[in-house]
Length: 308
Image (tube, rainbow, N blue to C red; front, side, top):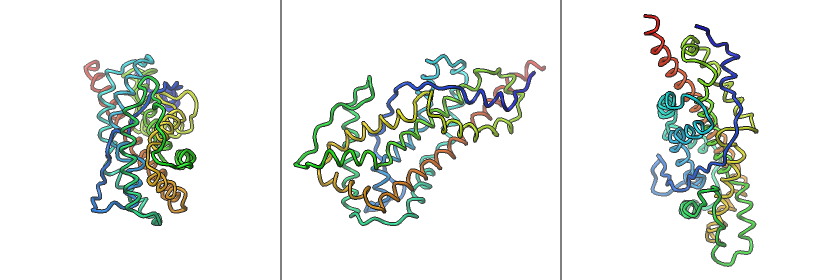
């Protein structure tokens, strides 16, 4: 029985990726904060505007679509390892805990001069707009249909939409979802260049030592990403976001523009992206460690009868 070297394991985990154009529609989910209040705070409204709750809740369900993409690409052993990855994802991603950490980070930033009731109203309007535009999405391309113009007379509407698309966190959060999918895809590829006997012979400590390196390598990669490239995910989210924003009433669009253009709004937006990424990285490390541990356990269980 030959043990895998760390170099071999790294090669297994860092295989080349090619991304198909797969849309991940998040606008159909409604987010409710774990910190129930009669009046929504600016932080709660920001979490709703950026669809943080739905994104976190969707993480475990990504395994099925990633497994389908991997199987289509010819990755072997998918039926054997998918249940382990699904179980690892369910244990690694705790939406409530992740949301709590992100909310705590936002709470450390300064408040905003934007009226909280106006921001809450704009958040609810955007939730409805996201749901509506997702329903109109061309499923073949993942690109929303041409949005109708903003209601009322707002000559600055188009310009505001464009500025908001670039200012909001949603495109970066969509890229984080794509990154998690890449982590899952890499996990499914582990048995591509190894046997279960080789995996069983490798110390668990050596497997776990590779998880952080794997995340760093995948995050730095910007070409040949599977199953969804981060820049593709960003571009698709910008299209969906523009379609939704274009349907908002002028006052709601104005409220969002004022918030994201303010220094406090920019600080909260940046804090959100940083906290979301930190929470996602922590969960992705847990995902890989739990998955690898399950594979080692399963591999040793299969190899045991052969030694008897």
